[in-house]
Image (cartoon, rainbow, N blue to C red):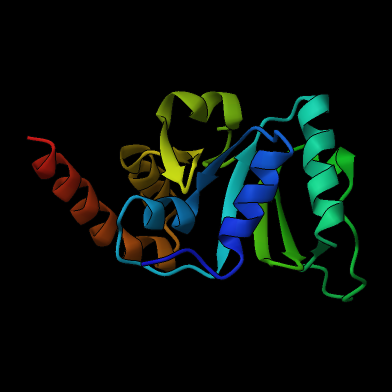
Length: 165
């Protein structure tokens, strides 16, 4: 499987700008060989003031706007929201990007960092939430789409463990 159209370009822009982030959600699953599809790229970012400014710069450069705004006002990203809590759902010139301040209730960048793997995206290293933690998070989320993905995530983890023996 592959990432959604534009996701690799979004990753490149984030990396070029020095944004500290971890790929989570369906993108993390796909990058680790799970046979699923996803429409967007989900990241959890470090919420330090410097990192928020770097992330904001990338979002502004991609003409990001809040796709969850029911009034369709094309609201631009704000540093205060990126430094806060919750989930920010953006449409960009390159596709959908979900910027998550935290996942699984209270797990931000620092809490997820020990559960991140460094994977190659071309000549670059990208931090991706590892399959065991991704399975844990999806199981607790309990949404139908997460429950549907669990067998595929577990199979990908088993295959990776079998291949490493």
